[in-house]
Each structure stands twice: as C-alpha cells, then as structure tokens.
Image 1 (cartoon, rainbow, N blue to C red):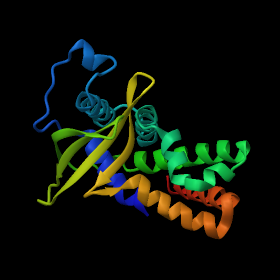
Image 2: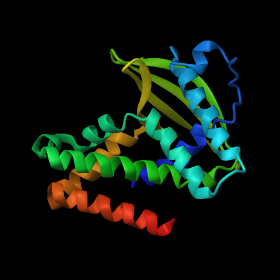
Image 3: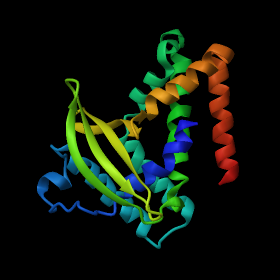
Length: 209
C-alpha cells in the first residue's frame, strides 16, 4: 500500500534536519512564500517544532502534525485524482463522504508515524518546472544506516499559496500508485465499497492509537 510505503519518508522529509538548507527569516519566509523551496523549508521548520516540543501527549503532537499537513497538502485535488473516472459517477453525498474519509485516512497515516523519525538528513537538490502550473522540488534523504534515496515534491500554487499535490519516491508517484489501488477496489466493490474500506482503515488506525 503506497501510503504506508511513503508515510515514513513524508515525515522524515517534512522534518528536514536543515542539512544544506538554511534560509534567513525574511518577511517572505514568514508569510506567503514566492518560492516552493522556501515553502518546503517552512513546512520543515514547523514540523521540527511540533516534534521537538516536550509539551503535551503523543496524540496531541500527532494532532498538531495532522493539522500542519492538512494546511499544506491539496487533499481535495489528490482525492479527486486518485478516484479517477469514478469521481464523475459519484453523487454529491458520496463525493463529500469520500473526500472526508480519504483526507482523514491519509493525514492520520502520516501523523501516526511521528515517532518514526530517527535523524534522517534532508537536502534540496534543485527545483524544476512540471507543466505550466507545477514545480518539482527535488530532494535526497540520507538515512542513518547509510542508505539514501531520491524523494521529490510536486507543488502547485492554489489560491495564492503553494500546496503539495504529489510525492515521488525514487520516481514512483504516490498519487498514481494510490489511484491504481483504488481503481481495483472501485471496479470490484464499487463506490460504496471503497467508502466502506476507508472507514475500516480509519477504524483500525484509531484502534491502534
């Protein structure tokens, strides 16, 4: 399952131990950023603050991290994309229910791995254009065991601010892979079947917590 495969990466990348990345606290970096690299760096700094605090319980820190991801991931667009052609077949009620469950499932999966961070080093390599609207921020993660892998963020400016719309791990798209998994579920079990599976996954995450 792609979300589980990339969840630890997403946390590690979001934490960004500012190796090779140090930007001054300019007015731009404190407010709406004009550069996607600074946007990703700002997300890193906020995530580090959440993890490093000794105040509150693990659940409270997970809740804070989930809110952080909710603000910076374009969950509605990701959810619609991974539903594929079945999106057009959904009723308004099904769309609303699906989007809510999908968003919560992704965010809980990511935030539940807060404790998995173990000092990975993160470095931005470059940024490049992707189509007319998107930018890819190319990064590399160095793990403590010596393994390293490429992990890239696809970002788009929506309503005057950048949002993450996909993550690529060694060239594999989270959104495309998730879409493939959901397509198999939708073809076999239908829209209500997918919604039911998302409810079950959320329930299991809550039980595990």
